[in-house]
Image (cartoon, rainbow, N blue to C red; front, top):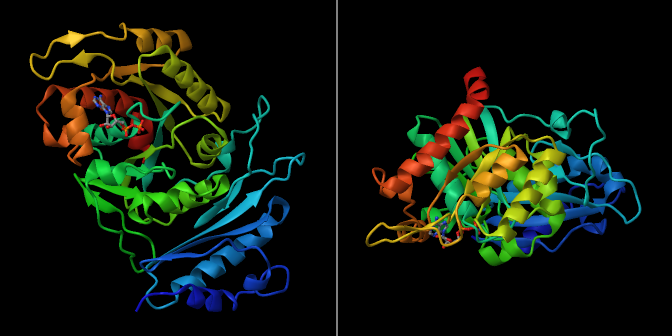
Length: 376
Ligand code: ADP
């Protein structure tokens, strides 16, 4: 029997809001999406009231999950800062998050915003893969890097946080939806020996695209904390492209041990990469290095290398900026075809030259995280 919006509203009518009226009468609910047993909506409140609403969000979620036929409920608490008011400190709770619509640079000597974040039990290191703009091969690199880390003997997860356009379902060929365990946590899909989670497993791409800024953070927090990740050495987070407020908020709210920036050799993209670097520095996340993707053209027939964009731009830039240069990945047909058919090259051609490049990048990343992983 399929779940209806009416059933959801009836359940929510039983939850009392801090305003003393039923949640359904508090004028805070977004439209409710019910799709295939999965329920999504947000509770929109003023940032100043957000703390008081956290338990209401949790109650609403339990109420919705109790409806027979509901397989997942993603309920975001969104708080938008009114123009001209001070930014409240970001805070979080299990299962959801509240993000201010804008963030500011911490004063010199102030504790890092990271210090306010709870680690995720069982995960030694969470790292972000970011890019200044879309289309530079960030997701392809994130997945193949995760596989490279796997090949080094690490237990690895991949979280596709690109809520605006999740590509991990396409890159991995995963079509199934995650099941819930007894604690009502989503069980990540295991593929290629990786634990994988993507918003694209839960909603159609179109639905993901219309989510507003603050909901992105809330949904991501749930994908981090309401997922039974188990024990992982590294969780690779494929970030949404760009370096705007949404990305800054993510970088600030996820307990990151480091970030990797993907750039293509063109100048423009290096400028974007510099922005990415500045963003992570702003929130005190160490940049583990820059990867140059589509670095040179490698002919699929004769293997000849052509440096069509010049050579060494990203390496030089990394040196100038004082961050490690992690490696160059060629623009090669095999990377594109394997990626777009759901058979990432590190897995489908493990003995080939591309897999070796991703593993070498993985080794540099692993070396930088060694202390954290060993400590865990
Ligand atoms: P982003 O996540 O930055 O938007 P994607 O990883 O989705 O980028 O890649 C964009 C396109 O480029 C995809 O079709 C992908 O297969 C292709 N691509 C990525 N890296 C390479 C590469 N090194 N060589 C050839 N094609 C690539």
